Length: 140
Image 1 (cartoon, rainbow, N blue to C red):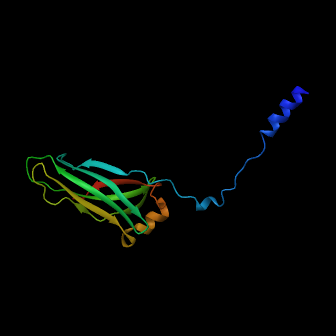
Image 2: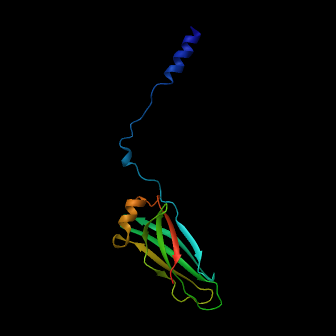
Image 3: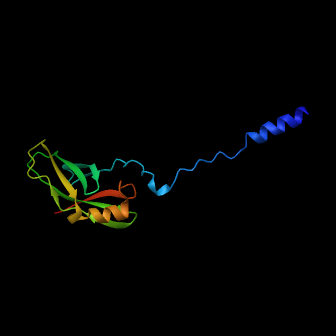
């Protein structure tokens, strides 16, 4: 009888306790990962660091900081892209530092709006951009 009681208690503990969460499609996506890209110009004397600053339904906003390590006035231009694996999804307009004095740092930005690739980013990368990676290339 003692063993029967233990088996009964064990079976009671195995009762299905599934909870219906409704449609999975209504669950929010995970938070946007921090997207950052770093690099230098071809001479190695101007650096850039770009960060994904904001992701909204109508806008992806990337802020880039340029810094001049040279002993002369320099400037640099880049284009930011979002890629899904090997597929290019969207590329920004050219972003330039403008003239940088020796040791100077300046910011500029790239905006992906409905006119500049935001809809394609939404379709390919998800609303929070988690399916894509940001990259940059120097534009001369």
